[in-house]
Amino acid sequence: MAAIRIQPARADDIPRLAEWMVAFVRELRSLSADPYLAAAPPLPAAAWAVRFRNSVGVADRFLLVASVDGDPAGFVWANEVLPFIPDSSVGAVGRIEACWVVPAHRKRGVARALVSALETELARRGVRFVEANWLMDNPDAGHAWAALGFAPCRTLVRKALPGERTPHG
Ligand SMILES: CC(C)(COP(=O)(O)OP(=O)(O)OC[C@H]1O[C@@H](n2cnc3c(N)ncnc32)[C@H](O)[C@@H]1OP(=O)(O)O)[C@@H](O)C(=O)NCCC(=O)NCCS
Image (cartoon, rainbow, N blue to C red; front, side):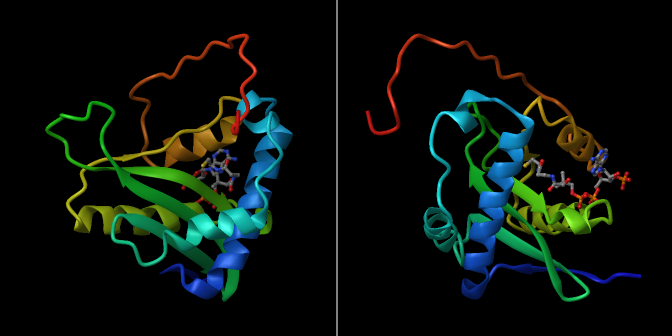
């Protein structure tokens, strides 16, 4: 049986993680015409690398890497954030920003192992809830989160407006 190993990302994982993040966004774009994905040029790997570097070794940021029989296989990236009602008696919440598994390693328990390791780390820090979200154009992700024990708890609704501001506008 394949051995899945989960480890905190190290500095030398960053270039690979940045390439994976580019692949993740590319994959989402292939699934969805969501304007948040389509409107801007994709962030290059170098820009993701900066973001990931800021997550390595920081207590409330989580960047875990999976390998299968020594072969790099995927990652989960999460942060501790406030709950959506900031004065809630619930303190920090774990928010999963991205979870991506190399296509050749999918459906073998890699995401399950990554998320389980993340949950263990969050619980160790006293965090009681972990959240994830997915695009409705990506129902496979919804199935995976459900299988991992995540249940819908609120709904985001959105409406397009006529404004044209760009990220730098
Ligand atoms: C979603 C994703 C992370 C799942 O990774 P994975 O390693 O294949 O998932 P696992 O093998 O650990 O499966 C975990 C559970 O989800 C289920 N699952 C995984 N992919 C599924 C799919 N495409 N359809 C239905 N169920 C799925 C598995 O059956 C498993 O449940 P089980 O143990 O009860 O059978 C992977 O498909 C991926 O990287 N997709 C593209 C990125 C993405 O959409 N990420 C999620 C949004 S952040």
